Amino acid sequence: MIWSFLLGMVTATVLSGAVLGAALGLTGFAILHFFAGGSTRIGVQTVWNTLNVFTLTAIPLFILLGELLVASGLARGVYRALAPIFGRLPGGLLHTNIAVCTVFGAVSGSSMSVAAAVGSVAYPELKSRGYDRAQTVGTLAAGGTLGLLIPPSLSLLIYGALTDTSIGRLFMAGVLPGLMMAAIFMGWILFAALRNPAIAPAEKRVALGAALRGLTAALPLLVLIVCVLGSLFAGIATPTEAAGVGVAAAAILGFTIGDVTLRGVGQALSGTVRTFAVIAMVFVGALVLAQAISLLGLPQQMLEVVSAWGLSKWLLLLVVVVIYLILGCFFDGLSMMIMTLPLVFPLLTGVGFDPVWLGVVVTIMIEVGMLTPPVGMNLFVLVGITGGEVNLGAAAKAALPYWAALLLGVVILCFFPGIATWLPSLAFG
Image 1 (cartoon, rainbow, N blue to C red):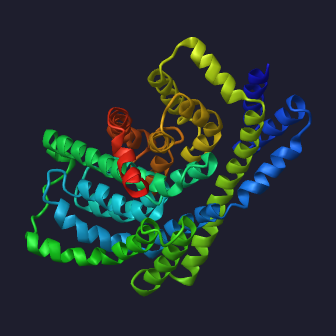
Image 2: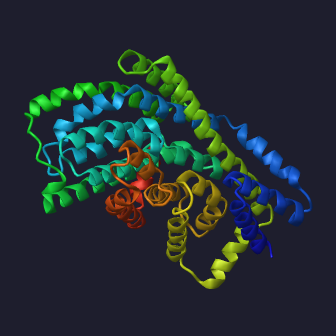
């Protein structure tokens, strides 16, 4: 009865045109009212108590950091610094797209911000050099997903806040998987370029010494990375304080060596408010629903059902992965994660999965959604940057190998979980 009510009301409210956060929250309040003795006050108290947690203030700060990076144009200097290094490989500047996205992911935390910041610089440059336009968009869309995995990550931050998992451990856990995915992406580019050299014209080789000297142009962003991740991993700053330091450093760098203007700051603040409002609405709705689900003991009921079915924990994980693949066609990544965690987290940790490892796997599945049409947000961002020169279908087709590579990453983490858990265990014991 309760499961039919839950699924039916969520479906009905979403189809009615209500935003996802409202659909989740209304369903949670209805469950509390009709199935928990009218205890709707508990939902309100849960929202109040959770939103008063200091750590959550890091979310709008990391969003603002990403917006300032887009407005500053710092990606241009970093791109020019790394291009001679990776231009020596088959695939040329397509490798640079991944490398620069990886670097920007270490300060942004947002997939779309990374895709927009790097794409606005890389696409015109590669277009003028004769690179395959769809392949260029595919690499940029894939590279943008690294912004959600490499710390500081909005996905891992929200996961930690919702599941009461150490955000410091989650950030450390994202480092090696993020670098692994960047390496896999570059490996595919190398293979594709060797198979079909037409996708990437040969670049003029720059002497290695000159290329290394040119890396000085990337120093401002490295300073920003040290400010954010250095203060966080050294234990001298909380995630919120590290985000605040990053915003201050991004503003200073943007005004001194970047293109930031007062108008640009205003646009960054406006973009931050809009983005955070969407996330917060879904977050609040999910909190109410999670409280209702927890109060009625639904996760425990699911565990009992799973035990009765005799499913192994790996088969259960496969079912969850398939569900995420389906939901990725209809919801943006962060909304999908917030919506599903109240059930997925207790279910999978209940059968023995490590919560930190699970955070990395869930984040990768969200990244898959960022490349999945018709709602793949990275694809939409980059199609917009191309001015319609690459349509959504062509962009999705070019991103398909990277979509598969992300799933390969999940498989690798299943066989070698230490890739995600080794650094946190080393740092925190």
